[in-house]
Image (cartoon, rainbow over the protein chains, first blue to last red):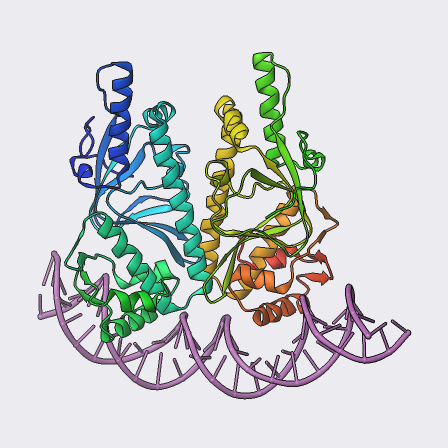
Length: 246
Length: 246
DNA sequence: CGTGAGCTTGACTTGTTTCAACCAACGTGG
DNA sequence: CCACGTTGGTTGAAACAAGTCAAGCTCACG
């Protein structure tokens, strides 16, 4: 049950900094709409929320009242088995729509857990759908997001089904590094990296111990450097080779 | 490149037999539309195709000119790695839309291969989209199909990431049996089952040899019986236990 | 100062793969 | 009609990747 710390009609200021951001698309859609009708600008209703690190935001089958977009911090989508095995399906970064299905269906199909402190915007679902009906551009954006989501899900299945431990871990790290770079969150090959080994283990279907061993090999081979919360990739090409990224 | 054996505006007759069939929904949408406008009934343009067993219908990145729906036979969606490792993402049964993304985007994101002889209907994309814009019911149907697709993809990731060989195989068989039952293709616990062991191996991320060993154990334990192309489940409850289906 | 969460390492076990041989069913061409 | 290659299934032995168990370490936090 998320607590709402404020209640506003202004989209989150941070979001404007993100290039690949549905918040931006939503505000743009509203502008187009306003220009077309000549009506006074009136933003889609937004609630800003904020959740501490390592908290469950929603669990499987929960009803999510709004369409949530991450504005700050990292979260993960998780499916848990009866015997407590866990699979992380994706990591959510600033600017990510939690799930495209939430635009149409308020029922969550997996749990969402914070990794760091998280701030997210909950857009009014009805307003988003209305904007969608009026703006073909916004519809295209959402359609693109949906396609990206299914492509990621399929890639995950291939990785888990066909690849070994080193390949899986290398690809996960490279994938995150690329997404962070797109958001301008990489400086001199170094980025903020709040994941613990158990996150990487849950995302790759490996045990924590084995994950640690592979990461140790990567570190000794000079492929990654992890200092506390900072990740550096001194040899991206080598890591790409380890991850069979071609 | 599929060969079109006939060219017709009549939807495939077989499809009417399937309860969960997008063909049926498309015809229904057309009826609603015709009734609403009073216009003469005019079905969505359809091309019927047919492809022999073990053939590639489309490969990754191919442009698919229509929206294809399987009418008869079994097919599989496949992603292949550079070194020829393969992951089957899903099995397509009669009545299945090949992929919901193909309604909006003609570019295929994975290969589609036939297992048996296959007959499929290719619906005119523009007409489908027009029908979608006019019929909220059809939009809901498609939305539901999309949600089912992503739920299946997520389930696959969890199975591949967290479950052992026996669990994966048991779940795959039970999942197929359930889908066949929904289509009325099960008689006295027996169903047509054209999969070879290598299909099951590619779908579960295991080797053919190991798949054969697990299936042998299931057979000796009286959980499955496979005679040529026929599958029987003498002890579904036992198989559900083996598959941790709760 | 103690406690708990996270990381590293080593020894051992288990599950899965690899390699290899063999058999049965089937279709095809001589 | 038979000889033959191909495809699919079964089985066993050995190799290997990953999991399990366990200990010891650091560090942050009360």
